Image: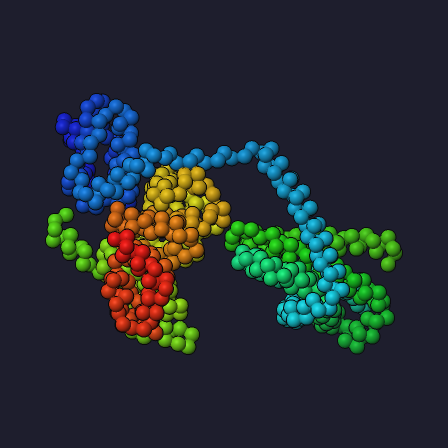
Length: 373
Length: 267
């Protein structure tokens, strides 16, 4: 009986397997299919003849070698005949590899308990590492502060410029629109009671005390915190951080402290900027919707909004700045391995910053209400 | 294969670069380059830093567009090829980049399987078996398959890069500085690996390198680039006799002579 295909035919009488044409990767699946459906003699000798083979690549050679292996296990004798010399070379190379070494087994998937345990331990270690990072920064800050020669004015001003000045347009636009939205929503309610003028009180309190600092901090966490992590992460991968260390310049002094200090200056300034535009947005909306003239608005504003509202809002900004800058820098310094890790740490930096910004905001609210401010 | 077919196949040009000119930044990187790569040969591309080797390689790969001139790969024009033509060419070549360019988020096995998953319809088992075979072929230990690139040493990363480059059984491979950053023993082993693959798989190889030992050991012909031109293409023994001052400076410095003596002595 003869079973054949364009590329291969098997004569079960003479036990000859004749290979023809191109034995390469593109034909591999049809060849595999042929082998699986081939009816085999139970004993004897099989001759694999390669005199008509035109092309043999390593995939084809691999297939022949695995089949040789399988057939020999079944107790058949396998002989390679009439293969051109160059194919013979490739075949013997592959045969060596197949018999020599079995591919390693995939490591087993960890169990649920193991995963939970590992995760918990990693979180614990992460917290410990973050605390020691903060400790290191604090000691470095003391060291640098005591010797003005180590103050990095250029790096510091560069950070203020990049995180503060360049963020002005987007922060202005965002808070302007938040002012409009808040006024619109509250205006609808106030109008029902004819209490239009109280929009000034509500808007002033909510923007200056809560929305201004909070939204600015969230925007900056997305804009600057992520940039810190990505920059430091790439520098870490490039061994730039190691290079600094070997030159007797600590990364904290040149890279981390200017970033933290710079943001500490920039974020309160941005918050003032956001307050201004939030109030302007609300004022325009109040004029359009509630018929409160700009004069009325501005003359009522200082009478009903005490200065401490602004100050409480501004007091939060440095705390948020510390949260954003330290998280961003810490995550950047934790980058290991490759591009993947940069992406993961950048995401983590933004998520953690925003999370802690909101946590600290809540803590502020509790403390301030206890203090009756 | 008969003798005539064989010799025809030998003289077929795999790459043909004609009148290639490139203007990058504010300078002419290539002023007029003509170069052919024949089937089955190992062509080395050398030249001082900034001589446009890497740009030439990128143009052959279709990553950078030349200002004018033509590049034929496997007889097809590359500079204005459509996506389908380009893909048909891309399936027939493999590339080892200077920094290996292994995907850092994938394990070694996944890296090597990647071209197979993308371009063949084989089942997962076969793909893994083929990828494992290539990993063994380049001399990596089997247990390396489940490690990530960052967990491999420099030499192992190079070998992984080669394994990924040859996984589709290409006819042509490009190697960009394959031995840079390797210790001499590993580098020598790498040269042997390249030669071994070249003879068993019948590869055509274009190799950009500074490694003089590699050039002596594996290159059939060497193309010397300088001042935006192809100064000379010849075998190493002929190339070093070229009186051009740039070539003399490159090959007849102390290191060049040491490599040459070493090689001629070996022979």
